[in-house]
Image (cartoon, rainbow, N blue to C red; front, side, top):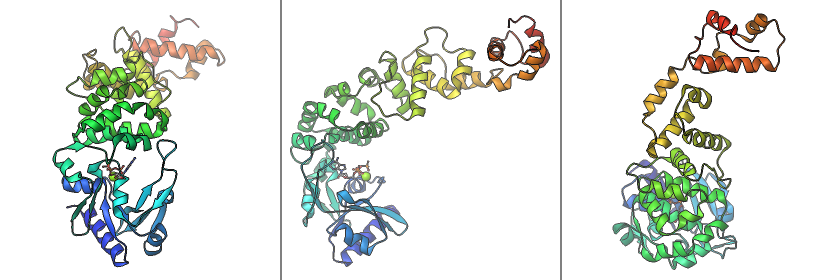
Length: 384
Ligand code: ATP
Ligand code: MG
């Protein structure tokens, strides 16, 4: 097993030497049993954060939740004190953290049985929640009553979908029914949290299963602007990855990119432009489009149209067509502003920008070659 597991076990040993009961917990134990590489390794301990900080090189990264990040053997580990979660008001954050002396409390506050396992430094597994059986049978099931657990924290509804997309497990019927019945709680949690979990879900190898569950549970209806996309994409054999997933979805959402999603400006602009380009009814995709939208957006729009069965081009075709453009930017014009002004004997003004645009268009339409002599001659036929 990987080096990081060995280090985590050494860290547990070190904590125990100081007298604090400690375990590896959560996703890392699940991944260990499934012989997968964990994304991160969490440790749960009886030691209070102040104790951990006293003994180890650490940063209080989540003190509100009893979490400190420890630097140990050149790796970082999140160490959280055994705790019980208090009741929640905002469906996401526990209002208070109550520490516990009993590791079982800490396990019972966790989301799913597959994430509720403990492992010690000898790789012995402690299972208080039936997680081993559920991993064996590939089932995602909440720890405790799913309605209560989703009421405490509605993000867990989306986390169930994320784990399905990541692991390919089925979701236990009762848990699934509760996801459906509790789906409106998703509106109560912050859009950043929703977005974060959605992105993780879209990257999973079993996304198709998660999309099917979204439809079955009607969660597709509480994810703004994605319903038609989820329904269309769930029927495809090959699924679009994140960017084309959004573009296909927004095309099927009447071309609207909902304000709800906290995309970066870069992504929002990219999606909006790709949607417009993809939805062009005539001549997808012209040299003028390639010039105007650039290569990245053109490739994305073409990908979306391919998934929608509306493009006959490969990515290579788009790339080649772009490389063959006679001109990729106004700066590439073989005639400078100075030369144009001298030709007309005029001062700079709005006319100049307009003229250059017209020249670029004529070069793209192959009406004139992008060569100085040809362009100068072409000016004779142009209106200023
Ligand atoms: P991943 O492979 O994505 O890291 P993970 O299971 O490790 O999956 P994390 O988000 O890293 O998930 O969280 C670590 C652990 O913390 C989980 O395994 C689970 O036990 C617990 N946990 C995380 N989020 C919640 C939540 N919203 N409610 C209850 N328990 C949670
Ligand atoms: Mg993790």
